Length: 519
Ligand SMILES: [Zn+2]
Image (cartoon, rainbow, N blue to C red; front, side, top):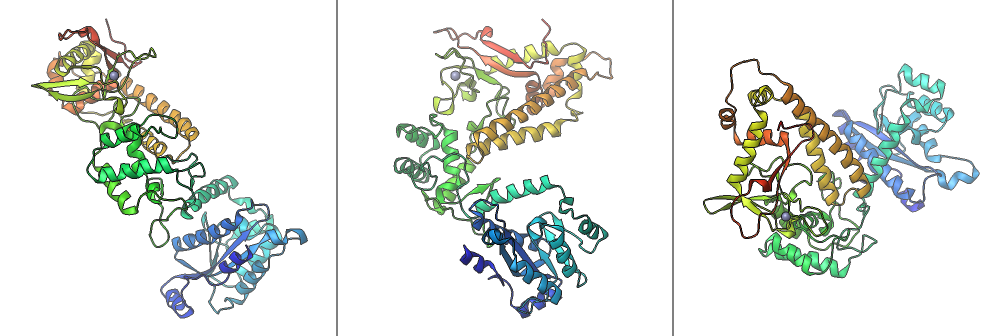
């Protein structure tokens, strides 16, 4: 421990030489000292904490055109029994008074992660402030930004002794975030649940599972399809770490996860060190970074509709008129309906909607003539929209858009991003489901607002309107937008065995709760 602290103290390894520093100073850079402190009440791994503090100080400095030319590191832990003494703090204030460090660097300011590291009582703050302001035009920065210590306010704080002038809660949140990022930068596993391929310690490999992952990557690189590789995962006899059977989506998420080559992502970006190289984790890797890059690029390219959301239509999927809305209504053995979004597929001279294969979350057992379903639904929708409300929907929507569109977009995208994170096991189940509930509630509220807005808008013209002509004049995406504003889904029930005739009774529109079709 003391060894580590000794290493951190003094001139940082990557600091410029004195002559270089003086050149940089002429060019407008501030030469600053960093102050770090391990407090005695931290948990036992504060040894890492102080490394993090040092690293974070460098980041804060860089943000404000400052260069750390000396680090002072105190360890309250070792001194706790004989009263708190801080020899490094004393050295720092001495250097501040002298105007330069023992190595001769002029001191233009101080940086630390937060001011409660710097002083804990009025007395030390008074000493610090006096020595700091002994020279003019110095700069001070911490995680919350820069702060003018020559100001009236600073003196005021000194008198009041209130180091808590800045909101404590902000600081605490900031510290928690810093800790998470710091762990990632050190390459420590931060997932709350183990990833498939590793043992419960999240570091050592599970031999059987990691072999499945490795051969999955190699198969993809050898030209096998994702579907075939998913079959291999299923055939291996292993389930996901949650005990679910493998689907294309889960296999894809796993193989795109940089963890398999030792890298890590946070908020969608690879964690990199100060040189821009990806940080290599402490866990064993399954494939090489090159293999992971190749596979994740390959998988990114083929964005399959496998990424459908369980609720609501997929907004980006532009296929047939009802893609995203049609759901399979086949009853399963457990009494519930299949419910999988059906895929539109070309067939003979036209197209069909059919349930997705079991590997993709469906039952694969229902399909229906596309044009007949589309026509029936359009008829029902336009029939419902006939009358003043309907006319206004068709009149208004293409020209004037609902003012909340932007918010709905954001909420929808947030939900999708959340799902991605959860699949990549970057957030815990608890976080995911509590956050998901919030997002879904706001999406639902916005969609209701949108429909009410559309239905309440009255047309200014009193001319009779041909709704069918209006419908035909809309673009495909406008038609789809309108349909998804009114319909929750269109349930396709299984047909009569042996009969190929289209039965309208097997196509059931499910309206949004706020839409009441007149009968
Ligand atoms: Zn189905």
